[in-house]
Amino acid sequence: MLAKNKFVVLSGLILLYHEVLVFLSVPYRCSWPTTTCPDAFRAAVVGDPQLTDRSSYWFAPSGMMLWLIEQLSDVFMKKSFRQVLAMRPHAVLFVGDLMDGTVRLTDEEYEQELARFRHVFSMPPHVQRLFVAGNHDVGIRSPALCPVCRRRFEKHFAMRKYAKEMSDLMVVGMDSIQVFHNTSIQGFPSAPCQRKLLLSHVPLWRESDSPCGATRGSARGIDYGQGFNYENMLPRSVTENLLRDVAPDLILSGDDHDHCKHVHLYPSAEGHKEATEITVGTFSWLQGNPRPSVVLLSISTCLLRKQKSHCLRRLSNATATHVDEARQGEVSKEAWFDYRVCPLPRQLGAVFFYLSWLASSLLVSFAFHLLCLESQSFDISQESLRDLVVVD
Image 1: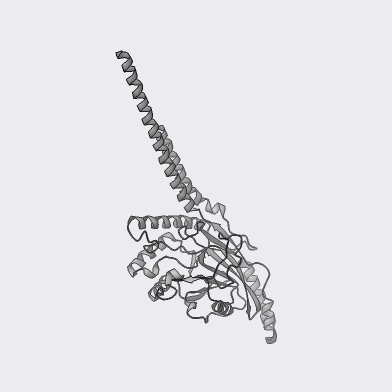
Image 2: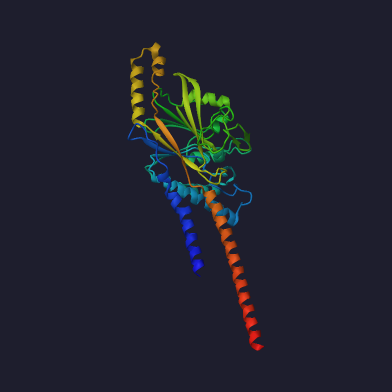
């Protein structure tokens, strides 16, 4: 009985550690990057949560197995997101693939998945939230291209393209799935003295296997490839037009499920510009990457205001023939943003540990049971022997 109680207590402590303490430790293990401003704007960037559904796994189209997988997916992301909110972000940016099998869902099923998403990623009203669509949200090409899905996404999350001001920064949300079918990117307001952040689900084109930085889990970079309902880079021509028409300074993308940092150099009205692209890893532990994560982005608001004011003064003082020179002088070498990849608990490792613990516990219990049987058999044999001696 004592051994059984010890086993129950130890199992409870193991569950407490893996299901509670490791999640509570996230805000202590991760912190917002420091900037030159004490009032930095903080944005958490969430990539590819892809809520699992009946279309996610062939072996779990319905029934108890599907329910279990959905619970494992939702509980992990809700606990993780609760800790992200505990770090008090001003905004949360979702870079696409909010759900997994949207293109296969009926309207009724979609409403159920929408309720799941809002439950998992519930947040207070003062936190800004911005979205862009991913290939799992709206489809990318026939037969997976889904006009109904696009209408549903625009109704509940975001339009195909938008431009919004966020803390002295122009945020451009681009439905990168749409630009696969239309290489012209027009209609964004001109803001020559304002930094631009571009949100795109699909990473922009670069040479295959370009370096991605030390925080990437895979040893390889992003390779170009395509298949049913996916293409893991925007075409080169689309990328060139997007950079030219939007002229971003920072790009946030997803889709790859692993982290990658790449710098794009492109011509613009201000001369040659650099745009840093940060591809965000998946927020889920069920999407092929055992190391889920979230990106913590700090934006130096005071520096943005300073740079904008300096640029506007230069433009107002410049003659028409020297406007380009003034715009070129606007770019400051001071870093106006910094980011950090925050690793989430490794739930896959916890599941393997649970299975190992269960298997070893059963093995020890079975061995103990055999020893007890052998001991009882030995005691019976000894008793029988004594009885024989007494009879003699």
